[in-house]
Image (cartoon, rainbow, N blue to C red; front, side, top):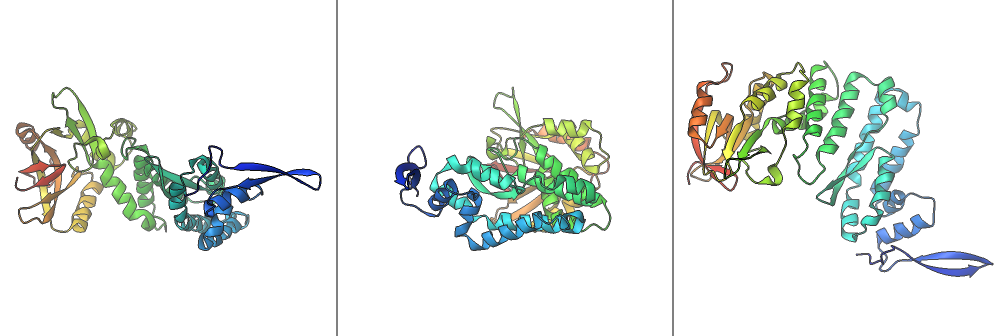
Amino acid sequence: MLVVSCNPRSVDSNEENGRTTDAVIFAEEDSLGKALRIHTTSDSSLLEQLLISFPDAQQEYWHYLSLLGDSALLRSEAGIFQTMQVRDSLANELQPLVDLMNESDLWEVYDSLEMDLNDIGITCIVVESFLTGFGPAPMLEPQIRKTGSQALAAYNRFLNAESESLMGEYPYSDLSSILEMVRAGEALKKLPDNRYYPLIQARFRKALVTFCDFHFVKSTDQDQSAAMLTGVGTSPYPFLSETRTYQQYVSEGENSPYRKVIAGVLSIASSIDFDADTVYVLQSEVFDNEEIALKKQYQYLDQGKGMVHLLRVTDQQGKVIFVLAYRFFSSLPAAKEVLQHRPADLPPLTLKPYFLRNDALRTNS
């Protein structure tokens, strides 16, 4: 670890040829310390100095800058896309900087690094006060508006929203970036014969099922309800979420099967008590394979059918099965009422009780 005083450098003044020079001294100088020393005494950016220790990332960085400086290249959609791909490759190559920054405990230089990266369309992804990686940031927006197709614009929106969705203390406390991923992904899906949708299809579908997988948890005294996302979680972290993004999405009246699904969730949402030990699930199919189960869920959601939950359940033999569900409740009368008045377009549903233990479902207690 690099050990420094409150000011990350100490300065000795020396007389050389009648002028004063500052010699920057670092204790236990490692690659970050060397970069900081050179950065304070040269015109190179902090990022460029850090990359000296990582030749592969450095090579990709200079390649990327050469593309950004090629005005002829950026006048074509193919050239813009090529540049974006190299940017994303560079973001992956920068991963060694994550450990370097976190282990060196020199967050006073974080702002400088972040500015260097933002200047070239890369953002720092920070989760719970730790740098966890790097991702796309808005870049080449004028060129995309002028030269790019609708598909490229939607692809760019998806990448930017994806980076934003990875940040924050609670992963689901603000769903606006996940909603933007859903919107951009759906826009790409609707555009025929574009090269970009296959690149984001899996991530779009993951964002979609995450966004739809919503339930309420009621407090012990039943006076308050908290919005939660994914599974049957009752703990605030990491499941705590919000409803304003859903309300905004539904009120905007977009012509989308997913809007129909979310409107149904807001009308009748799954709900369990904080101290529940049994959950009554309105389920359709049960699968042994999660990938096959997800494909079936995507099919339902694309049709506007509200099969919003894919629940992991452990059976008596310890095997995990995947249950596709419309809603679930800790109240048996509530579950029966919703089952009786379910939408006509849903697949056949059965009511099945499961035991709830530590935010997980089991077939036996």
